[in-house]
Length: 429
Image 1 (cartoon, rainbow, N blue to C red):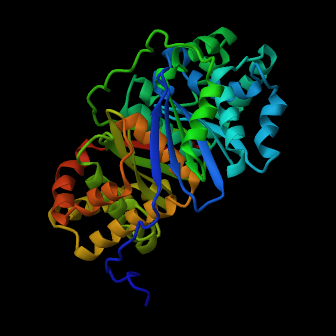
Image 2 (tube, rainbow, N blue to C red):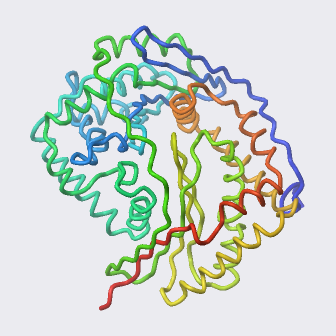
């Protein structure tokens, strides 16, 4: 038998590859971080804006996401088709995403095209023109995207769950916005959003791969030489109001029932985050987790069940999702609460704890093989912590978690009465 597989034995992972992480702050306030990985022939570069859907005004919900789409419709230097083909013509790609708290534009390519990648992503941020005709067309695209998510029960119930955990708050709204708010966006709204949010003090550029930091800095300076100066500080949403358990039941023309059982969690800065990560793996993180083994494998109640956690700058949430026949929901809830009770009554075994830590370490290690993941890690950590946390420090925090830590945390955290329930069931024919 291979060492560590199914035995609970500890296998050390050696972080033998030496990488160099360098940071430069330009006079304008733009922060540039790079991670040199000489053993690869590729690069990933991203421009991060410290603003996401959480910063959207209520009547313009979804504007951060819409701007992320709209910048690809043309810049002062390039038309839409040129933006699309610039990286693809050399075997790379260009894309973007919006989260609750950040927006990121990124490129991936061979290392020889670092300057092209930097220029491409920076151009989107620095000089979008938002052509009127294309903006109206893109509204149709985003409205179809909203319909797509609404037609996907797992996505739909997740949005409803977030609205329950963060009621009447920007962070609880869908990142993509609503049909009425997206339809009402005007060209001048997009320019105003960019002028307020896409300022040097809000921008972080990160890159990973076979690169030289000095070359990266020169490329960023050239691309952002005309970037707007710092304007009025955009408003930041206050810390979410205290969480209260809520029950919400919805119907849709679907065949399967869907349930999210969840509650508030912890922020990225919480000292309990490592404990919750280990608890999450033990409870619902993968095929060997307690929930999957009991509810799917032993009883056959569902096809898909897992637990999840989200951590933000000042808050977070935790939940359990499963899809199953509505007639079995109460049975499944009893089994979930039984697992809660077992985790609070006695410490998990050394074998289970070791396996969970191994799963966490392995996920980190496998992620390091992707330059895009490395680039993303640099961006998120700079924005959240103002520094890059070493892999060794991350591993040490996870390794320090004890079975008693998990039990103590579970005792306070896994109280059934403080969990919200969001249920989506088939509508009557």
